[in-house]
Image 1: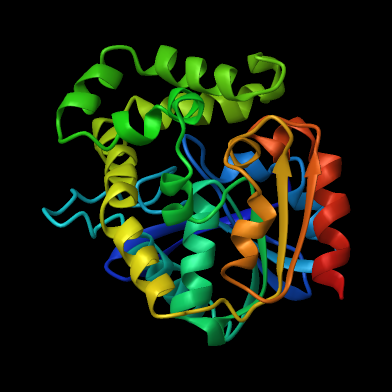
Image 2: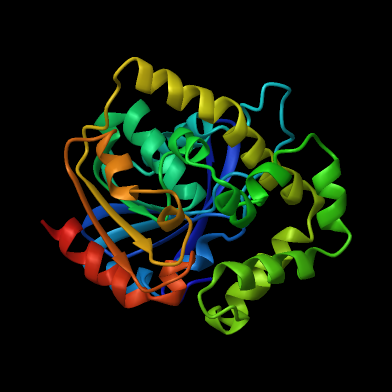
Length: 294
């Protein structure tokens, strides 16, 4: 648990979503990425809770939330379905509208929430991604080597599940180490690190995480391309932060990719690898405390 936060389980869109909550003020939904869970916010959430009602769910398939089996069309873990989870969560909590801040896979859920449920979202914070369709289109040999997991995890079940399950702790440790600027597990608290390892020891959650990427390679990508072709835009104001040594930095002009989706985009880069909230929490607070306070 994150210090000072309470926990509950909310039934949303047919699954149980584990929720961590603290603070008062404007609702602020924090959405984690892969291979993490709510614990990735532990260094910044208490500070954000000084002025916000901070709500931190585990996305379906992660943490203590439900991990249903995937479907043939890769929609179970599509960002559209996961965004519906979040819209239903806000309804279950009696919240009409919230600001949203997402990292990695959670940022993909966040911008899909902005596209599919614009009335439920105020401001949109994005950490360390560019839109799914644009990311696929930007692949070079160097980016393919860095982001190999996008193709590995998306392979048909059960091949990647079996490979990860052979030594899940080692797989998680290697992934976390490779994506940090310091290439060290010292970036993560012992409690957070154990929570990331523990969920990877559960075969259902390994399947869920792989299925998350299967959706990204198929349903999510196709939906992005369709939205772009139809000229669909994000109405929310976007604050985008990425690490100088993370994935968006390798994908071309990351800020301009977001400006292809929204009229109001403010962007900045900080000294970090992929796990910005844990590697450089002050940069996250500097970027988003003023943004959500306006």
